[in-house]
Image: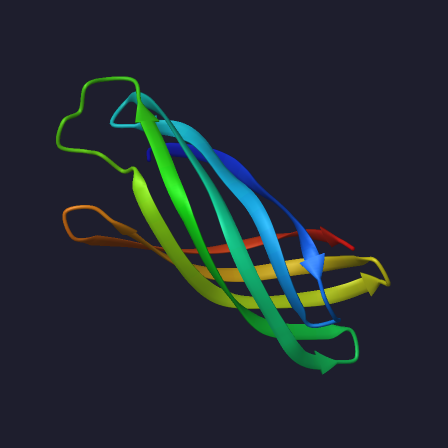
Length: 128
């Protein structure tokens, strides 16, 4: 992508303080080779963050979803849609009881004529 913007939203349930299941969607919009592009990925994520040091929580997550991409042109060689798997590390800094600052390192794999891997680092807020 030459230029890109997007975001994620997740909603779920934590059965206890460190283990949760989340449903969500990632969205990205931008340009690819001067063509408008959009990527939307609904997914399910399992988060386990058992390490707690005062306000710092550390753990791992895994996800499975379906990536759907559209590009405003007939680009036959590029079909970035399909099943996407991912895993990563999550670090949260608890600001107050129901608000935390998230730091996530993600590694994701998309299967299409071979496997395409992407890595990203994101930050955000979690409201509990």
